[in-house]
Length: 172
Image (cartoon, rainbow, N blue to C red; front, top):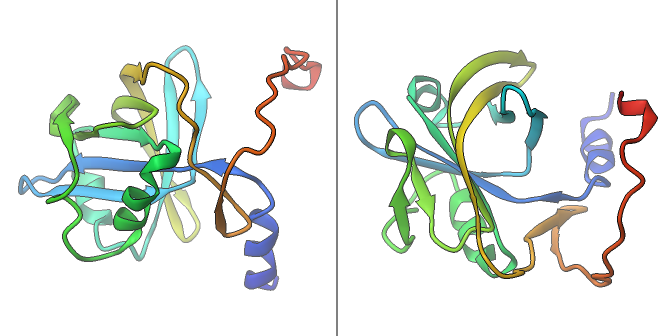
C-alpha cells in the first residue's frame, strides 16, 4: 500500500486536536499534540489515544501513572504547534494547573479528561493507550474547537446546529 496515499485518505476525516500530557517517572513533564483521540466506552469511562513508536517520549508515557487529554480551542493553535515539536521547551509559556497523577491541565482548553492507565495495545507503528477517565471538565461558554482536516487547521464555516438521528441502528 502506498503510505503517502493512505495518509492522504486518512486526512479526509476531520478531527479535533488534543494535547496529551503526563508527568514522567523522573518528574519531567511530557506533552504531545495528536488527533488520534477517541471515545471508547461510557461504562467504564474509557478513551484512547495512540503514540508513534518513534516518539522520544514513548518510554516515559508507558511509565506514566496518569494522563490528561486537553482538547484544544481554536485560539490555542500556537499550543498545538508547540507540542507537535519533538524537542524544545514546551512548558515555559504554557499556563497550566495540576491534574491526576500530576498530569498538566492546559489552561483554556475546551475540555480536560484526567485519566489513569487501563491497557496498552499493539497498533502497528503506534502504541494504543486505552485509559480510564477519572474526572472531566468542560470550559464554560461556547468557544470554537481547533479542527484538523486535510493536513491543515480549519475553521467551522457553518455553525448551524442540528440534532443527529441517534441512536443509529448500525451502532447497536
